[in-house]
Amino acid sequence: MIREKVGAAWGWILAALLVFVVKAVPKPHAKEKMHWTEVELILRKKFPHCDIKTWDLDYKVPTKDDMMAWMRKYWLPILKIMTYRKDESDCDDYARAFWGVLSIYGMGGRPIGYLIVDTPQDGHAVAVFLDVDKTIWVIEPQQKNLSEAFFAFPDEWEAKEIRM
Ligand SMILES: [Ca+2]
Image (cartoon, rainbow, N blue to C red; front, top):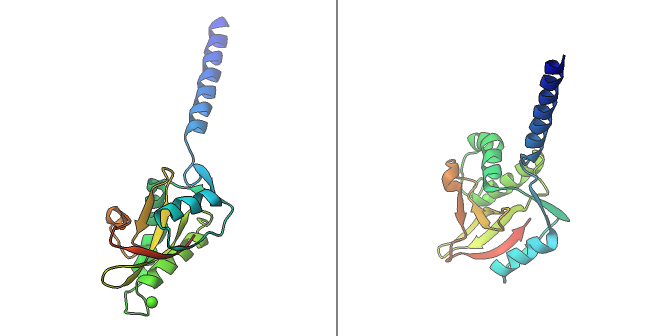
């Protein structure tokens, strides 16, 4: 009888420990909140002459791994149905589609936006993303290889417009 009660007590302790561990594991896509003023401050510090507009009050900030997982699941299937065509389906269209698909799959309210830049050769449109470490990442939505889709903002580019 005593042995059964002790065994049951250990069972409850293990169950409580399991619940604690499961709750301690952070949920994807909602690790930290960032007020729009902080988002704008980070962007303006990096891009002082850029036209920046943010739309949301509190942004839920994903990690880069969260973004890659999201892109693998939702964006790569979209890339399979898009075909690059000059003007009709080029960089600005890929960047707009990327931003739209985020909203379609419930990833609005994240500090991920549409970025227009001047490069030494031409203009370009990409996506821009702020992670939990406040690192600004450029995302090239046309890039199918996700490990190459993320890069730091190139020094020779000039940011002209951000919508986030
Ligand atoms: Ca276009």
